[in-house]
Amino acid sequence: MNISAAKRLEGIGEYYFATKLREIEGLRKQGKDIINLGIGSPDLAPHPDVVEVLYREALKPSVHGYQNYKGSPVLRGAIADWYKRWYSVELNPDTEILPLIGSKEGIMHICMAFLNNGDQVLVPNPGYPTYRSAVKLAGGECIDYDLSEATNWAPDFKSIGAYIESQPAGKVKLLFVNYPHMPTGQLGNEELFAQIVEFAKKYELLVVHDNPYSFILNDTPLSILSTEGAMDVVIELNSLSKSHNMAGWRVGMLCGAASIINDVMRFKSNMDSGMFLPVQLAAAKALTLGSEWHEGLNKIYSERREKVFEMLDMFSCSFSRHQVGMFVWARIPEGFEDGYAVSDKILYNTDVFITPGGIFGNAGDMFIRVSLCTPIERLEEAIGRIRKHPLQPTRTTAI
Ligand SMILES: Cc1ncc(COP(=O)(O)O)c(C=O)c1O
Image (cartoon, rainbow, N blue to C red; front, side, top):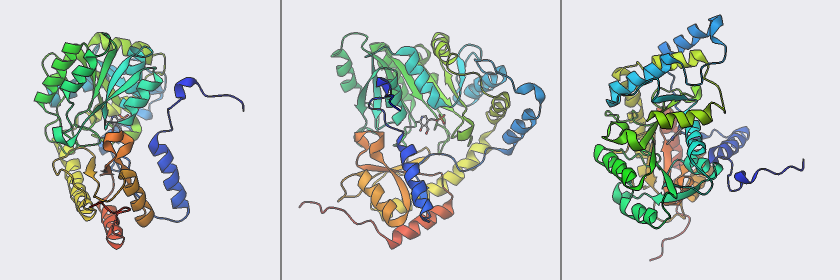
């Protein structure tokens, strides 16, 4: 058919994992037993009580209609209670919370609600690729800010500030931040969050803090909204995908000042309708789970992480043992072109897939990322295969 895609799709490729999963599927069809340590989709089940609520509610004849655009008051109330209990943040469930069909869609809605053509947005490099594509699709321009090991993956406020000052007033509009940071596993802290809030006030930016990993391998979940003055300049995305093993359910949330939530809502309500009520009620149930739930999950992730450390030691990668979240981020060994070369070599030699760090931006080129969403037996199987086919450098290092 002779129809061309819209200009806004120029430079927007298919999401890396969509393409890679197709390749992995192809290899599986050839009979290969691929161990996929790429994507961060929890392999463990939600709490049985959560599934029970979904089932019980879905049996009722009255729950199958369209739902309120703002989300069920039950879910909004549960989100407010959850924020108070875990993050000590008070939110008005009526005006300061917007349930989302996963936090990924929220990234797009925020960009559509606030960006005009050519507005600039500061995005972390390395960082979650969706920030970049959403900004571009909404007509904005991405300005990467580099993160590095040397500064514990914190933004270099001085150089970002100098950049903003070099631009016409108001040109730089949004700043995406994400701690615990994906892909590096760097934890945030109160001091860093206070710096971000102060910076946003100084340069009149709206900060979007993306916070889906605060419970994973971390005992002290933190929200940037608990920082003094944050509600004036920050909105926070959160999600049940990782913390409650509900990635496929698509339940997330946006929290922040009523006026901002309202603007996002004006866009979102024209795009979709409220989520299936039983899903919302089951999500509300999930948010009441106590520390035993998170401790149970973290015990499993912690054992897996030890195995992944063992694997990365076999590759002679260097990495921090203090990282959190659902992945391990590691610098590749000497003698390889980049993380793509390492990833391909491992895949073709051992049928184990590991994500090249470069898909998160070029500051991740010399890294790889290993997911913890695989049972320990499969990690052991991967280690066994790698032992049989050790990683050999593709080029010799110049002396
Ligand atoms: C940093 C980050 N933000 C957001 C998301 C999207 O999560 P959700 O399932 O809530 O859309 C992910 C998912 O991998 C992520 O890694």
